[in-house]
Length: 256
Length: 307
Image (cartoon, rainbow over all chains, first blue to last red; front, side):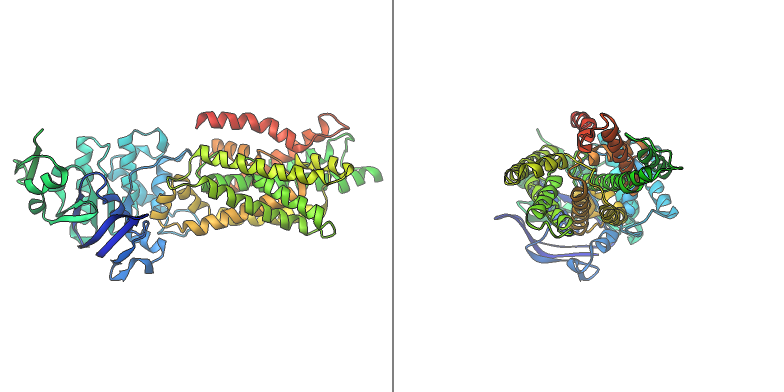
């Protein structure tokens, strides 16, 4: 769905992302891992064209990203960004309906089906009763779920999620990943998820990409990527690995 | 309902005043007062109010800042300087005033925007401070210009700078009506995009808004609205602040409603303010801008404390 060919991104003279190449296949979830400042957010933002790349190419369905209009990109790629606050009293349903912007007419009002889709996304994210509440009255975790609902309401086939589990409690972290997994089943969508929780990544992602200093350090299945030596080299901490007794997936325990 | 309220307000504005008019059985003098003085003045007040309120509402959404206001951002002063330049250098050309006012408003808008934005984005303080800088800078140029004018023209100007509708003509009304109508319609058409911009520029980009195009449309039309309003009536302050704020309190933040409703509410507000300006110490008159500022400054302080 997305083909990323040798892209580099600079902020001023600094290389933030260097020579990154990978494909995002239909139906897969890639966990994007790495320490703070590794370039994860920058990389993800360049994939929908909101941060310009200095070299390389992002191809969406075979065509360069810059050949699409912003609306065409927004119909295909949805983003959950690290949240920002608004000073205006926006209700939850208004906020989620903004996700339908690229699908309807730019000028008019949402259709009945837009509202239906938004309500369904709220239900999926366990915030169905929040429709008339104001965004700036919600807790951090509640807001995070509404932000996810807005991304799901787009019906986009690519989801780019920047720390979607930040602020979420244990149950809603799992819910979030299950929802994304659900979307990706049957190849309808695919997702790139930034997270600092290596265990959630191992549990739900098909592949993991470990980023260090803007370069790909390792890319492969979670088992291939999350080795003690890789984690030690990138994060600088000692870890123990075993298998999660419930799922059999790799489990990472930090040695303090 | 707002349309009916506007009709009632206009009716009150033409019938009340130092000479109370019954609107029927008018003598020749009374009919002249009604049709040559009060009616164009009330209609102009309504159009000026609509223009300033719509400009304020859309600038606030675009800049994600409920304190953005043409007067406080220096946009009105840019238009005032343009009008003065037209008055000093092109007195013979009637169209020079709105054209230069528009240009002045546009330049001031652009200057404030460039000063207020930084790599980290735009915060409330930076925007308000940039507005203060542009406003005081333009004020000093206006003061310099007034000192080269002779005394008789000076008094008229000081009055006009604070907002003055006493020179209302039908020509001025037609021009502001055209600008207010076009501005309200086009800005309402951008309201769905503005709803996204209001939440965040990056969010808007992510969800498919061509933000540079929306920004150009809003800056351009806000400058046009403020330019024509100021050229006709001077700088009537705080309308663009109070009116959209009250509208949002009443109906929420959806700009598809806020923008057109602000037009009607702004029209009512300035018509009433001008009625107060004419009648408070009749037969003498106050500048209408003094009335709107008396109401607006406390509202501004209240909003600043809340954010």
